[in-house]
Amino acid sequence: MSVFLAVLWKDLLVEWRSRDRLAAMAVFALLVVVMFQFATPPGASPESRAHLPGLLWIAWLFAGILGLNRAFALELENDAWSGLALAPADRGWIYLGKAAASLAVLLAVQLLSGVAFALAFAVPLDAAAPGLAAVAGLGALGITALGTLFAAVAARTAYREAMLPLLLLPLLVPILLGAVRASAAVLADGTLPWPPLRLLLVTDAVFLIVSFLCFEYVLDE
Amino acid sequence: MSAIGSPRNDPRRAAPVPAPLAIEARGLAKRFGPVVALHPLDLAVARGRALAVLGPNGAGKTTLLRLLAGLARPSAGTLAVGGEAGSRRARRARVGLVSHATALYPALTARENLVFAARLHGVPDAGLRADALLARFELDAVAHRRAGAYSRGTAQRVAIARALVHEPEVVLLDEPFTGLDARAGALLEGIVRELAGRRTVVFTSHDLPRAAALADDGLLLVAGRGRPLDAAALRDADALARALAEAGA
Figure 1: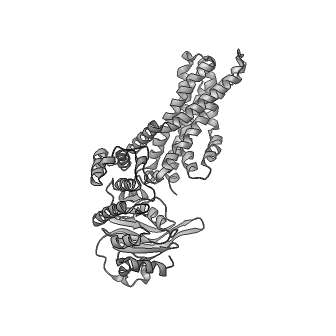
Figure 2: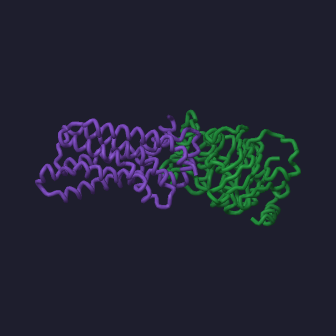
Figure 3: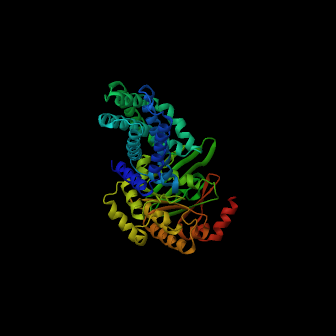
């Protein structure tokens, strides 16, 4: 547990000092929202606004991948990776620390871009906010749970920027399916339907457990 | 006998071992796919001794250190550190490693880097331990400056302090003198000399005079094959250079 807290503290402190991950992710997510706002005709019908949950998750997904690619870049500098790998603890706790830090940054980006999204598309957030926050959190957990494992795998490959989305996106389909459907229901009538929520919960749990167990081998040469 | 390259052919094999072994490897080997990085190697290092691992680039020195540290899985053989075979996790608790790079986070200060390393190793009172090491290595002046701004010599001293944060039985130093100016090199030499008196030290180096001055025992690695260096070769740098040349290093 102390290893988890140490890694989380270190990653958040480094991020607070540089803010490079947060800035890149936030700018990207805001740009996506702004571009889609430009592309949406004024006074669009409710049917034409059905794509909005998908748009929101495009912004969050790719912002998340952008951040995950940076998550292990700081470990490669000065070979800090070896320092982490030398910890005489279950390496799953290192994984959890890295994943929790990435999740915190992604949640901050979701909050920022979610507000921008509500303003840009005149979405009334008062009723939808709690439900959307829950779905956003569960979706972000799924993205960072599996993304942290694959970011560690991709970090030491020659084409890591391209490798991470290639590895990650096919396996994230259940998360995206559940997140987009649940977000659509929340934005439509403020309800949180159980089937997509269940899909998110189960997938998150599977990703977390598998990644926790596999991370031991990822840090090896 | 502290370093054994090929014990079956070594006439000193029957000699009594005067001190308990800090490192004992039997048939330790490492392959990366079809490439043999380290051929089966027998190695024994007594507690409190300093072993210099010498050889040209690509000889397998770093691979050997990473195996000893528990960072890589051996393809064959057995390895015991601190008298116990144990798991790789247990081995990681007994060793401190300073690799080519410093393993420091540039955005963190020296103190923060040391506190983080102490917490990773479960050291109680991580802050106090970090402060003690900063004082011991005369790093108080840079304790609260970010590591990205350090000179190579200062970064190397912090890296060694980081490797000692959990008081390991065995300290592994991978080419610690590379890139240091004369003053920083002399300072680091003093640190290694001080360490070698109290802990088992294994270091790799291309700096033959320093290796000759610091090591009690020597191991020559060429193309992944190891053999012990005799005491005469270790006593002076010229003899060491001749031994390396004869081995084709």
